[in-house]
Length: 355
Ligand SMILES: NC(=O)c1ccc[n+]([C@@H]2O[C@H](COP(=O)([O-])OP(=O)(O)OC[C@H]3O[C@@H](n4cnc5c(N)ncnc54)[C@H](O)[C@@H]3O)[C@@H](O)[C@H]2O)c1
Image 1 (cartoon, rainbow, N blue to C red):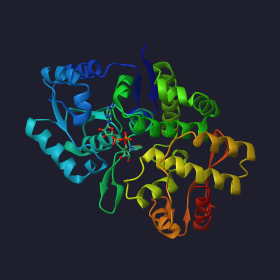
Image 2: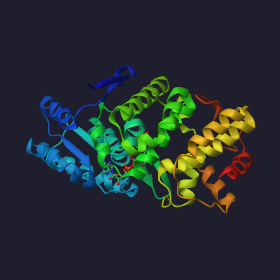
Image 3: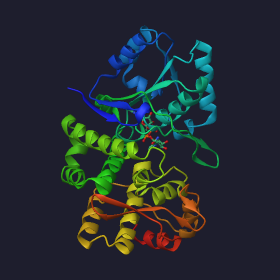
């Protein structure tokens, strides 16, 4: 039985459908459409589910491959997809199907937002991060040499379809790193979700039990949808989703995006944010210890940040950094986030001592 969660955004509202087979959802949309449609994915995903993709190709769907890495989020990739779409005769009524993780989703969403001034697109996330985070909320992104996601628009998908069978082929390291984002939802919004992940941590990673995964995915999607519905443009509440990200992003950049996966860097960033939550926001000793122990369950590549000032330079590039202040996300207890204006760069430097 599939579950449906609505992302309530007025005229831009859409459903997240959890538990559907991706091919049947794509075929249904193709049948509805009078135009040529296109699917964007990556070779490794295609190879892992070749018979299903072949079925769609036989039904007349064009497939376009982008590179596997973060470097695929480039303007060249955008132009490549747009040229392919124009070449095969896509028009304003065409639908773009994004089948992949955050990289495929971000670039496809951006293309859908600009091709012929905007067309429909549907997200079929294939990573846990995609399922609980990047496919929801309409943020799209393209990287420049000078930084990640510096180009982008908010363009909501028409539907998000979550087929959990994709997770069977996802590399374990990717899966584990993405679980950090679910843990984040627990820390900022839902103590019950935090407890559930913490108490079942090894089981979730080892068994990938469908009912456990669907529980975590459903809860995470509900939380993200609720937050996005209240603040689509990230002027207020949506900022709490950045818990752990200010320092996490800086750590990713400090190591040239080579050493750590996004989720792994966010675990380190959340440890620093917990330190600051205790220091300036009265997070209790008990909650601090419990949250830190939960984050210690993640197996992470060890890091050694020798140049703290160098890392702070990356913090300063954060879009939320204005003048000498930054909007920094803290928690007051497990399950409750607050937006702080009072964190200084010196505080951030001090928090690096927990790493
Ligand atoms: N738009 C948003 O709101 C948002 C939020 C968070 C992150 N992001 C973006 O998401 C990106 C990271 O996304 P990600 O973590 O999903 O990584 P990813 O998209 O790079 O995927 C990781 C790797 O796993 C492979 N893969 C994906 N699904 C697979 C499957 N089912 N089986 C086998 N291999 C599979 C991919 O080909 C890739 O090599 C970043 O660019 C980040 O900026 C966007």
